[in-house]
Image 1 (cartoon, chains in turn yellow, cyan):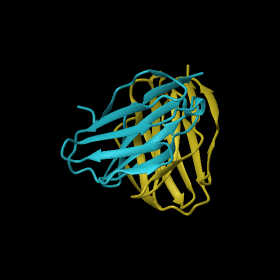
Image 2 (image 1 turned 45 degrees about the vertical axis):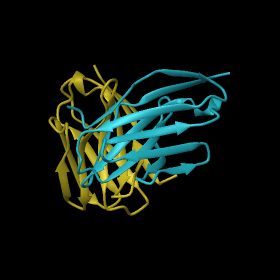
Image 3 (image 1 turned 90 degrees about the vertical axis):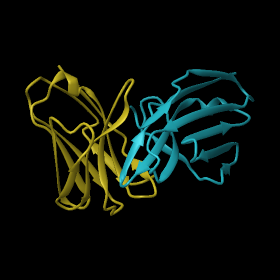
Length: 110
Length: 108
């Protein structure tokens, strides 16, 4: 299995609070991705990174920001969490051949 | 219009059966194609890539029809352990687009 970890694995928070999710890889992949997965929607891309300090928006980026200060770490921040951001968040690494996913973070916003 | 469309199922089949999943994609410029498998409450994992010439991996056969923008996955001799959700995935540029998945349950 690809060396990808996510933290925390589970989190419950309240509406309006900031939340940061961390993705850490040991594979030295250039590309890293954040997705959310919701019933009926499948996996949707939030943001991705193509190198240190190089990021771009995905399909559902509103309300989210990202940072990548080191190759191995990609952070996803919910500036002010809302109930609509309750979801399972997956980090992925990879490039043009395929993607490998982390174990996911289950986030509940009350 | 969704980039990737799949029949959500569920497909409930007996052990030993052959089952086929289909998927269509909307962008003819899509470059690469994959099937992923996702178990309940787990991360998606690559099952196989899909090539125009068709490719086989044991009991699994994947096919791509670029003219019809159609991808298929055939599972022969289904096992209980094949029960999962199967995701059709299409790559455009450096972004991956996922179908919502097709649920398969193999029944003893």
